[in-house]
Image 1 (tube, one colour):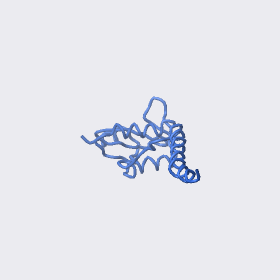
Image 2 (tube, one colour):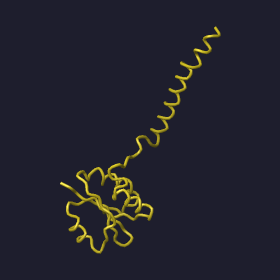
Image 3 (cartoon, one colour):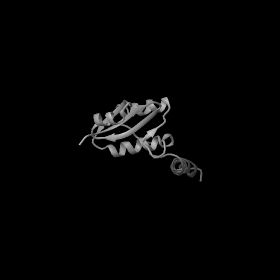
Image 4 (spheres, helix red, strand yellow):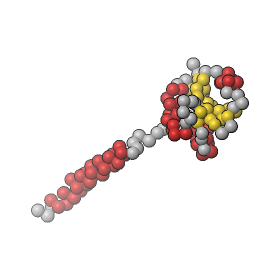
Amino acid sequence: MASYVYLIQNGDLFNIGVTSNLERTRIDLRPGELVAFLITDKPDPLINNLRKIYVDNRLPCSDYYRLANSQVKECRSFLEGDGGINYFQPFLKGPSLVIFFILSWLLITYFIIEFAVNPILGRFN
């Protein structure tokens, strides 16, 4: 069954949530205005990802967030389709990216020495 992941603005606060009945949620969250929504069959990964992105802006013990204008635009484009289905997080980030880079660098260096430099130097022996 389709669910709605929504962004509703109430003053300077924003509610990010999921519901199966968007109209009922709009009534419950009055006087808030619906900013954006996305219809999906699998809302859990999407809502968890959104909440993880804006965790630093969350008001304690609520679904309300204090978002900057750029964050509102980002969330809105995410929900309106720019990132909904085709949104990907980086595979590597932080320390794992550094380790991957160093190991890749060492592996490429090894192959260059083994297959390019050693055959040339071997001709001079």
